[in-house]
Image (cartoon, rainbow, N blue to C red; front, side):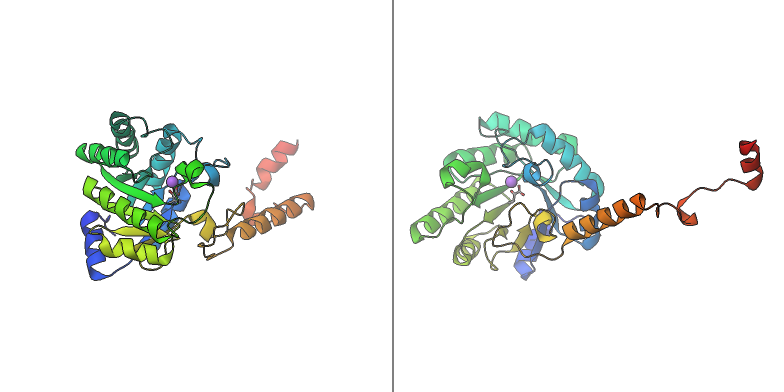
Amino acid sequence: MNKKNIGDFNRMVEAGEKIVYLTAYDYLTAKMQEKAGVDMILVGDSLGMVSLGYDTTFPVTLDDMVRHCQAVRRGAPNTFIIGDMPYMSYQVSDEQAVESAGRLVKEALVDAVKLEGGGRRMQSRIKAINEAGILVMGHIGLTPQFMGQIGGYKAQGKSAKAAMQLIEQARLIEEAGAFSILVEGVPSAVGQAITERANIPILGIGAGPYTHGQLLIYADMVGLYDNFTPKFVKKYANVGQVLVNAFEEYAREVRENKFPVEAEHTYKMSEEEIKELQN
Ligand code: KIV
Ligand code: NA
């Protein structure tokens, strides 16, 4: 399968075909997602919680993102990959934003970057990165890097006034030259209103069924990450329990001397050599 590009995503929107989007943080997962035919992969800064064990995304560094984007790129060489811009890698200035985005492209060969926020300042950042030739995905609604202002991990745009602000943010982001926008944690009606007004692909996570595509954090939807599960997550598997079961069975067999006794799991030596060894 050829790697999709923005032309393909725009065509999919035009044709009413949904865009399938998942996060990945490592080589193995990326490889399985490419095999499954996922359209785009986000190396999210949710890396901090899912793979690095932090409580928030704030501690994630640009070096962390580069390293994990590289691993995902190696696992999914033919998939469109978006590298998330971690906290304080773009907030300071347009120059900082371009340099950070540039590292993700140069060192990890991502196809695009994503940054959070819908204010005028983010418009400027998106323009600057875009002018450096790098595709940018906006991200509005429940934006974890604004956790302080949002007041916790909760749905956004629940009043008509707040929803109108989100619609305006989406318009500004599109105007700034973003190739797509991710809308997170809003009522379905708000996801729909933003999607209907947009001329670029709108991806949703917890934004209802009307967006042009859907994103989930892979570790949530396969039942690997169980510290906290948002309402919008549907569990397609319980891989966490499968792993615990396997680890337990292995532990039991080792303790009971049942592994590795099978011939298929041990290396052989000729009888002659064994005799010589025993002499
Ligand atoms: O970091 C991430 O995975 C994200 C999604 C949750 C939207 O930004
Ligand atoms: Na993120």
